[in-house]
Length: 377
Image (cartoon, rainbow, N blue to C red; front, top):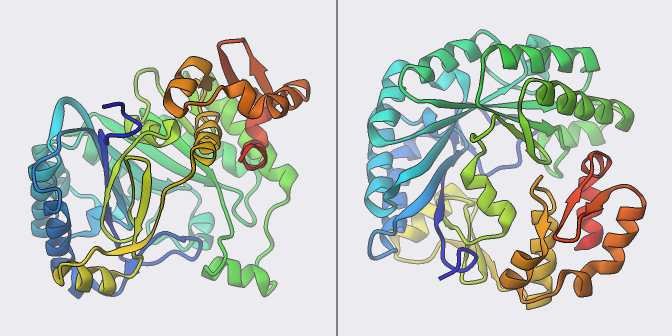
């Protein structure tokens, strides 16, 4: 069965955090650590709905802060995942972590259970910027965490945020270069977004926060492309850079619009062309799983043309672009019949390059990727 129908990847969500940062719009639970044991038990029950183990190529444990779990609960979670989602021999198993939540004991647990990759939320190396982001670690926690991971696990990814109020292009440049000194295999760079309903959005609406201008954000994004490319990183997706051979294989499943499993609060899954998302309420999730109910928030099955346009928009985010032959095989649509006029228009503007077999974003196209994707959708 093709990978866009049958999942070969799985996402598992752990919502618990020591603190809910003001910009974060993920399904996060802070100040309710008493729910951790019940939650891990509920996750095990949801995983058991697979009925039998489903081998996968990639697993990604995200959050929240999965490594905020106590060692016994973290070990229990890892064991449940190994039981129901056994990883192929050459598979990739990633987990997200905050710098202050990692120690030698937890890293040993991760390594012993087969985790191959740790994604650390560094965000910045400037104390004042971390404070504005409401992060609770300090800059020195990041190299300590990286060193700790490297004792047992080969791959380290660092997440960085640009566009923070008060941040300068030089601040961002220093963050990039300090991250590079830690020799990560992968770097993700995200522009700060003001998600409706978050505390950051409310402060912005109230005039307490002044976002950076678009010119400054663009300069920061271009600086990331220049600095990381010069250091030997591939810019393999709009926001992601990796050393050769070290791309995040799990995230590439999303950008290909292939199928994947999803378990836990707020987790999404895409199986046999049907998208489902679990409830974002941790109490509700636990209650419904224990009652033998599906913890769904919403579900949809897109019509074929909408699914094809979604595939186009997602695949165009990749440096590999959209390959005409593979696109037709996956969607049943001819790329040019579906969106040829728009693609030609963007090519004339210098935002897209087309070699006949493949369509991909140019450097200028990457700078306006979100707007361009919205047009194609």
